[in-house]
Amino acid sequence: MQKYESMVVISTKQDEEAIKGLIAKFTDLISANGTLLSVDEWGKRKLAYLINKESEGYYVLFTFESEAAFPAELDRVFKITEGLLRTMIIAL
Image 1: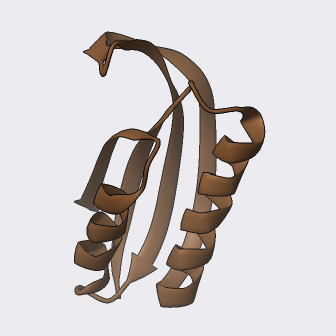
Image 2 (image 1 turned 180 degrees about the vertical axis):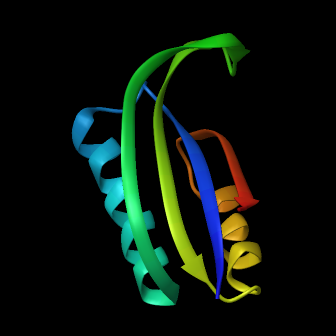
């Protein structure tokens, strides 16, 4: 089992329920495929530059342990999910 961190920037054009739904979706996905160590919601923050004409994003940091193949699957799910501005997965 390897430790990973994943930062997700969610579009603030969505309402709070949609944002909470996305966080719950990723929490469940990570828990089903590994061990979720922490979910740190940073909240709404100003972006350094415009992304899709948006100046703010909702930041969430997931810390988890999983097998080496899971981050590729998580990245695939991130790419097909509507409402995400940026994502990043790194090995610790």
